Length: 425
Ligand SMILES: [Ca+2]
Image (cartoon, rainbow, N blue to C red; front, side, top):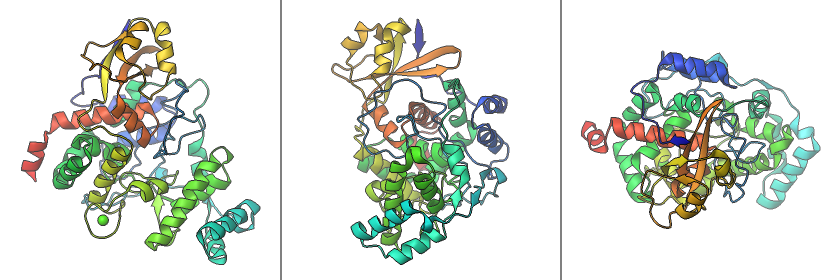
């Protein structure tokens, strides 16, 4: 019998626990850095982001995915871990954190214009989008191979055991809660306006930006052009996805009038406070501060509005639940529900047939999915994901990620109700 309800939010996650988690983690260095961030909040160490390693393995049937925000890893369902990133200054930050060695991408010279597949790509951009062939080849001539990006894209080592508790502790932690409250208070109008316009709770918007970049501190130090080109042409497993993103990025650069080599982002090419991939910028980002341009790197207001727009465009139901507590009688009997994947498809009666119930009242007809949150060799936690849980996984396909966003949101909400946030403004 396993019973899992969202764990109560600890008042403070002990640093030591985070360090222990770091020692276990595949991206130990980054976790460690995040832990250190709580000692020296402005030291500029890279944050940790959801890792596919921490989140995958089960639940294969996730094929109904709409375009995702983050590149899904090789297994096809869980999003890539986020890169080691460089802190960036944003309008909401008063201090500019120092650079960290750990966050610096390692690159090497490459002769991309000489490669036939790159020339094919360029020719295609010329034919379909009217790019200047010589100019685009020159851009590729200045592009370097981001070796770190390839390394960070590697899937988890076989035998790696995910731990939801360790993963959660990286995100629902004192620095993000403290900085989240600060960000919420100093952007109270934008957060409220975005919530009202798009129907997404304020704390979810604040939480996502915290999980992604610790409110702009860790937006990435990779040249986006290097990252996307490397993953398009030197990482075959994800080449199709990244070539699309590279195409979108070049279109974006042309539309917005910047040099593609100027922008920095994550190892996967995600940009700004909310870490949008180029296709998502073009499709979902909004100019929410009304200055006539979309700026996810410098405008917290644009970032907030864009996160809300993204979630609304992916089907967020205003006022709807994210999840319910689950009681699983027998894990083997419940297995078909886990294997059915994240998309909510099962109603309470169908779940009951598999020995899955909830201590909470579930509305009749509510479609749910059974989310398993393993803890290494310890007891697996379960929740019942509703539509809005699914929508968060469109931002990053990892359901560990989605649950962490939801739990951090709850911690933020409990720590500061919006009325208080407004009063503090
Ligand atoms: Ca703007």
